[in-house]
Image 1 (cartoon, rainbow, N blue to C red):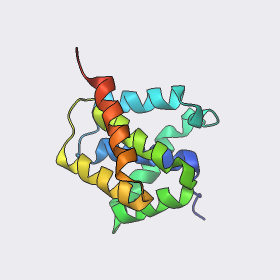
Image 2 (spheres, one colour):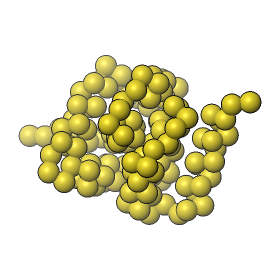
Image 3 (cartoon, helix red, strand yellow):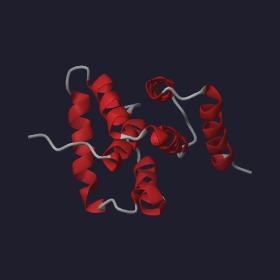
Image 4 (tube, rainbow, N blue to C red):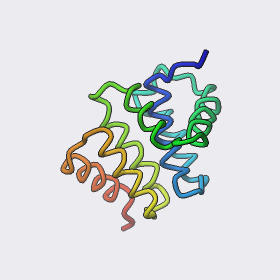
Length: 137
């Protein structure tokens, strides 16, 4: 029997997808994922020792037929609706850390926005806050 995807797993799936969508999971992005898991209250009950296993489960889903659509459905179904904007913010945070957002990453954000039915103003605010945090002096 397959292990059900928990809300923690779904949040990690989003971050892994945000890092991997451009076919390059760089060290800054991976380090940021670890930092977010360490500092954010949503991960207080998450056992960080399971991070590799959760990341591998995400990769396995993505590697299958229609993997991206299935992963997006799994994420949406595992999260409470009130956490959709948090998941979107995590994706933006992981993408912004290397100060370069590629077209593939923008497309993933569009897919997340559509799947979660997030309004454009909420998404714009999340994106703008990441720009403000990572902008050099």
